[in-house]
Image (cartoon, rainbow, N blue to C red; front, side, top):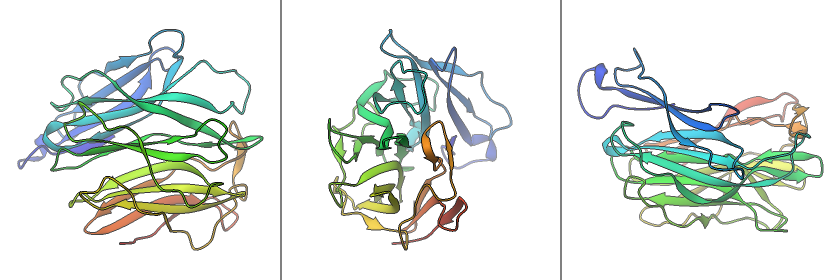
Length: 284
């Protein structure tokens, strides 16, 4: 869910947006909006549907509201997969679809690249690499991130695309720097502050342990600096977490990131105490 007040005025000017997968077996990307601060919602409608046998369903949508009535929705397009769990690591097209009039009409979906939404980090365990999108509140600037892996590579990178024309076009994916060639990045999160500084957080999985790292791209540069470690020490994701459909451990998808007034606030789940708990911190 994302919200934006288009301009000064009473609470009735607050717009709220929601995005989800629906239809038979999540074969539709559905959108709903409120134009009165959530007191009522317009009837939901599909803004994309699967296309042909190579596309089984949509997954993990996220929405961001930006300047001038811009709304962006990002999501993965899953191929047909075997029923056995954990699923194999698989590639998925990452799409974004945008509106320039607060969700009244939508452009054609744009394919940003091919991502890895479930990443094999151990022979019996998958980590998550869900796509994310963010938009500036007063500039025509948006960014999207997703996880990519080159065939046979022992690591996975995070690729970032940008748009400066309300989502009509996006830059080619640009990978963020990596600390080592045996690090797999999981679960990217994006945030953008008033000055246009873009922040990205991620889990950095290496040799069975995880650190939370943050990357920053100072305007007007399109490139991120080296990762900065946020966690005081790496943690074992198998400690205090549950096994399940993703394999020997399941760390969840409870991460977040905010950036404002010159500070960055990552938010993540961490089992260092033996229980999966939520942590946050603040950095420049």
